[in-house]
Amino acid sequence: MEYKIISGPVTEIRRGWMPTKRGGQRVRRGTKAKKSSIEKIKRNETDAIKKLTRVLNCNFRMGDLWLTLTFPGKEEINWETAQTAFDRFLRKLRESYRKEQGANIKFVYSQGRKDEDGNDARPHFHLVMPAADYELVCALWPQEAVTYRRLDGRKDHVKIAEYMIRNAKGVPGKKKYHTSRGLEKPVYTEPVPVYINSKIELPKDAIICEQHKTRDYESGFTSEYVRYIRPEKERKGNGARVSARSVKTNVNRGDNPSGGDAATSLCTREAKKEAKN
Image (cartoon, rainbow, N blue to C red; front, top):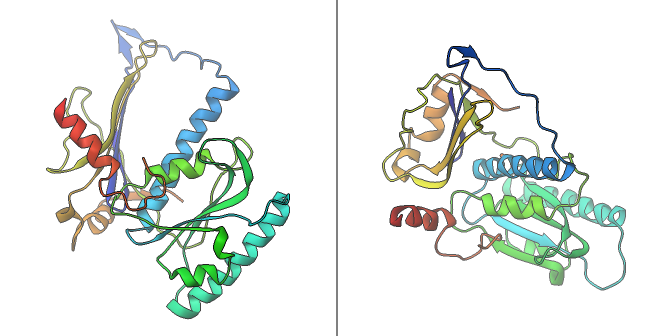
């Protein structure tokens, strides 16, 4: 079976096959191998990164903001105090944005617990939000404690999602990011049958960000995955978003992590590597 997940300009294709017979004999489903807690955490983390990536790709574009909000000074600060201060900031930000833009602000944030080197750090917050003036943010949070970046032109924000999840405070198994209401959600197309040896057809000029195929030799289960950025011409007018919703669907009710001024996207570099190989 094959289905697609469409998140803004990015499409993911997932395929999976489970053989029912092998050599005339029915294949038994093997018992699930026991996974250590570390392996389970890593698997859950990978799933969270994909989910957050879809949220970012659906809702944020070049020029939007990727903020890190810290606390000035060196005195100890606990998470309860930090969260209270951030909630106050977010409430005032909502009010200011609604007053200036006439609309509710959309955002995604996570609680940071690690620095860029992976060491424990004082409480801080990572926030992705629509474009706004630097002065607006600094009027609500101490200027010296604001790292202010603009999202660049890459269409797949997996690196930001990866950074937010892997640096997030939280209990294993619990959601590590928070979102505002009313965000656009990815579109899931209905699964369709496909032949196991058939090739995945991608649009011309699609930029492949990730692609792999795996097989469990014990059970015979085979899966294939590809994530790509659709060509610009397929995203204009009656393009991706309209055509995605025109088919029968069910909606799921997700280098420099800042997305700063890097001129070349990760996906473009990966595509070039694929071409050389």
